Length: 170
Image (cartoon, rainbow, N blue to C red):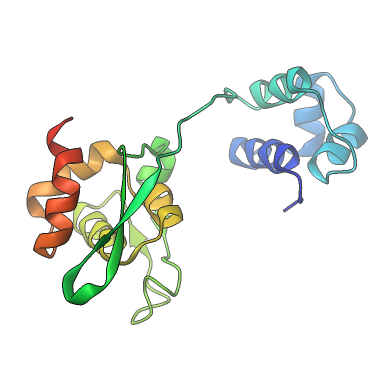
């Protein structure tokens, strides 16, 4: 992936839309070399240009609040994180097939979880709420699906208590 965030965003939109660079360039009314330069960080598009390219890929450039987190003491003194607000995921990510990073799934590092399947989603949510970093929470947890799963999650009391306010105020 390119180093610049605008290039990463354009490349991600193109890949998720299943478009070639030539096709996205055509749709966005730019040249293929220019699009490639944006994606690789050799050039930086203006915000208006980046928005036009992303919209040509079928996406909307939007601003989404990123939750802030605080750390709480968990069972046996092990810390865990709790956001100030529930994160939301795009639907395709909320029900994706995922492999958790090693720090979350050290006992089954190659296991694939299908978040569209409730039992897999429950397991991933339990793991992330117990062991996850803020980045893990915003990558794997969808607030609406968490609310739905909440009664069925098996969590230590301190974690359940710390998250309960977020769940009940929705």
